Every structure is written in C-alpha cells, then in structure tokens.
Amino acid sequence: MRLRAIFGGTMGFAAALTTFTAGCWVALATAGFAEPIAVARQDCSRGVPPTIGMTAEQLLASCWGAPKGVLKTTRVTGTVEHFFYKRGTATITNGKITEILEAR
Image 1 (tube, rainbow, N blue to C red):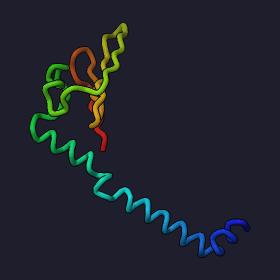
Image 2: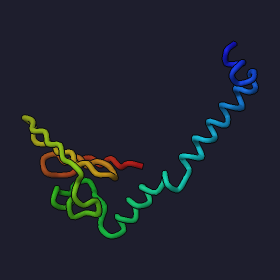
Image 3: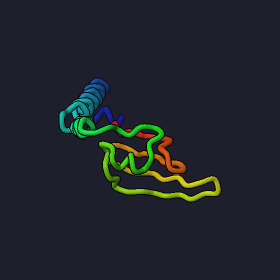
C-alpha cells in the first residue's frame, strides 16, 4: 500500500524499477568501467602472460610484474604462496604456478 503511494501505483513502481535496472546496465557498460580490463590486456602485449608451471622468478618477469602483495603458507605438505595483482591472483605451490585467477 505504501509503495503505491510512493511510486504512483503498480505501474509507477514497474517504471521506476525498469529505469533503475537500465541505469545499472548503462553504468556497467561505460568505458570507465571496462578500462582496467583493457589496460591489463595492453600491458600483457609487452611480455608473456603467466602460465601454469612457471616459477616465481618467471612470474615476476612476466607481463604481470611485481605483485601488490604475497601471502605465504607453510604446511607439512609444502609451501603455498598467493601473489596478488590488480589483474588477479597467481598461486604457487612448491615453487610452481598451480592456479591463476584473473579479474574480469
């Protein structure tokens, strides 16, 4: 009942919801939102992207370069390091990359 008073009935609510939803999609489709992905792809044109099986030294020499942070976990089974980048995360298990997560 109260929503009808605010939005001018059921149709007013539907129109407001449609406008809000369309506005969200427009915001996500803007060039400013997509720019970090385009920049990340351009940077990798200058070097080789990280691949499964690379060592930490090869990762640092890749187009991703130096990480923003590293989390190291030592377990009975070995060492796991997570290298955090703007573009994503690379997981190194016992000296080799075993997982790459890319932000899109």
